[in-house]
Image (cartoon, rainbow, N blue to C red; front, top):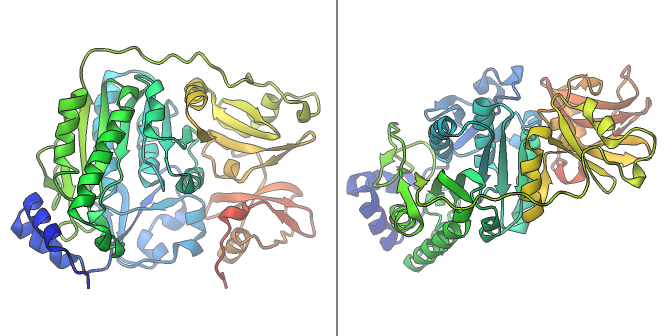
Length: 472
C-alpha cells in the first residue's frame, strides 16, 4: 500500500478538487495500467485481433486510434512482433500528448506548406517520438524530419534502438543539452517538450518515486523546466507550436509554467478544444489522473510562439562527403550511392562513415545534415550496413526500415520458436532457402538478417538487442 504525503494530498486537491482527488487517491494502490500502440506502417495479420494475440481483454484508447488497453501484462520480450516494431508499449495517458500533437499538426500544416521539422526534446525511451512519427507520416508522407533528443547518455542508446525498431527513416537522434539547439534559430515548426518532473503521475508504476517527492523537489523541477524551455526557445519558428508536458499533477509544474512561458518568452496558450471522458481541462491544458482515466498521470498544453520575427538558421556547413562519394575502402568500381540506392524504396543519400554506410532520405538530407553539423548526433536516417571489400554486409536497422525495398533481399518466414531463436542469437539452419543474405520474417514483418551458408546461418542480429532470458 502506498503512503501518500499529506503535502501531496493537499496539492492534488488544490489542482483537481477534493472529489476528483478522492477518486485518484483510491486508485494509487491499484496495479499500473498496460497499453500498447500499434505501428500503422507495420501491419501484421497476427495483430488483427489484439486480444487474441496478447491473450488479454483489450479496449481502444479513446484518444489514440492505434492504442489498445490490455487487461493483463503479457511478456512482451517473448513476442517477436515487439522486436519487429509492430507496436510500442506505452501508457495510455502518455498517448494523449500524441492526440494533442495531431490536433496542432493540422493547423501548422495549413499554415506552412512544405517540409515540417519537429523536435522531441526529452525523447527517451521513445514512446512519444514513435507516436509523433506515425502521425507525421500519416499527415505528411515522407516530407518531414523528426529530431529526437535525449540529454542523458545512458538513455539515448535505448531511444536510438526503439526508433530503429519503429523503422521510420525521417529521423535524427541527438544527445545534447537543450541549449545546444539555440544555434538552429527558427528551425523547428513544432517542439514537444516532455520535461523532467517530480513524477507524481508515476507513483503507481514506481512506488519509490513517492519517497523522493517533496514540495522542495517540486520547486526545483519547476525552475529546471523553465530553464529547459527557455534554452530551446530560439530554435522554434515564429508562429511555431510548443507542446509542453509533464507526468505530474501540481499547478507549479503545469499551468504556472505555461503562464510563465507565455509571459517571459512570448507565447500564447493555444490548446485546441478536446473532450474525452475523465480528462480534466485545466487553466491552460489537459490533465489525466489515474482513477479518472485508465492510465497513469499526464499533463499537456500547447502554445504558439509570438513576437517579432528573428533570423532563421541557414545551413552553411556540409557533412564533408557528398552524395555518392566513396571512401578508399569502398573497393570496386561502383560508388557507394550505386550500391545503396537499389536497397531502398525511396531516393536516399548514401553517407560513408568509415566502413559504415548511412542512408538518409534525399528530401530531408539537407535538414538532417544541418542538425548533425551543429548538434551531437547519434543516429540519422537508416544505418544500411558495413562495407567489407566490395560487399555490403547489411545492418539490422535496414531490415527494420520502412524504406527497405521489398525485393532488396530474399526473405524466409519463421515460426514463433525459430523467430525467438533468431532473436536469442542462436544458430539457425534454413533448409531450401537461398544462400547469401536473407531477411528473416515473422508475422509478415522483417526481424533482421542472416547470411545463409547452406549447412548453417550466420546470425546478424545485434548483440545489444538479443533476448537474454530463457526462451524455452
